[in-house]
Image 1 (tube, rainbow over the protein chains, first blue to last red):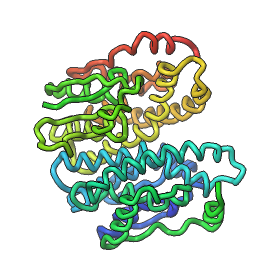
Image 2: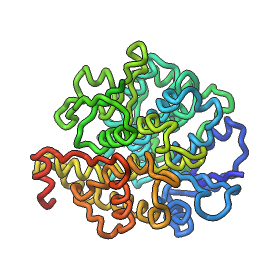
Image 3: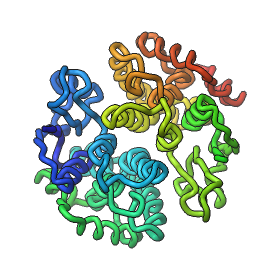
Image 4: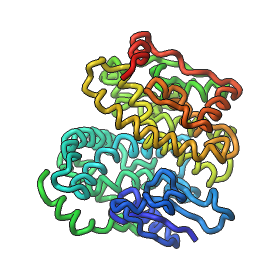
Length: 218
Length: 218
């Protein structure tokens, strides 16, 4: 059995729930509220010294060391190994990895962080001053995605797979970060295609307090 | 033949030069000075819409699309496929991926960016105000590495490989970003081990102007 430690309103965590559900794979989910300090306890830091969600834990490996995997996109790769969600030759699989790295370096730090600041920081937080710049950089990432999707239906080679799951997670809730997807029609079409894949599940609604903050203008 | 487009003073680019050299693989290097706007030309953006170095281009694939790979760590994976630099079972290979994602999300944006700001922005750049925070976050990444290296000799499973190459690139020049590695003895020992691997080559010295800026205190 595998256990995911994750925060349900985190796109990084939802990636794993989505793939595991689509793989029809049994798993246990332990809710860890990273926005309430639960990734900073001694117990959690023993599992992931980097203090982030999600992590995946296996119970079929002996000993404390090496049972845990960190980093959402690495976990996606391990779960998808040998499945149609990460297939093709080495070049195609590495092209999917390229999108996974793009997601973590050029997309998540802007699209996800803008959503986090809007939903999970106080309305007078000084971090809100960062929103215009985050919005600008996030739009650059969306434009790169749009350019790809004008020509290709998916990010994972010829079929839906882990690079789509990774990029879908925060793009689907980009509006909560104050992003307008109107200028990106190919991205909107792709989001709709992902939502129709077999076994798809959406990310749960955010907590009421976060949702009410995100409903306000910046 | 493969061509790397890269800036020689970029750790992300040096990763590829180091692995290719250690693999004894022939390659062509096209110097692209990303600090002088050379990744923002129409010609370059046609190769990588995300406007970053490095990219790898193959001449053995027909057509314009699909010949190029972006993202240094994805390229490392493709180059290392089937070699001892990324081996082991699926779990071990994904653990190496986990470190590659850690490098791009939790290490490079702090350790590399602090070096970039110190060397490649004017001495009166407002970006220099970010240095204390970058230093703090970079130290967190170095502490996570230290904790791993107290128990394990390498980041790529049981042997030196691509996760070591990726993390080495900017850790080896962390001093240029104003980082003191004295509190991280296991990191310093690992750097020394990497430097002794067969075929190792160090990153070229930075340009004179960058070097002279980095020689100054913040």
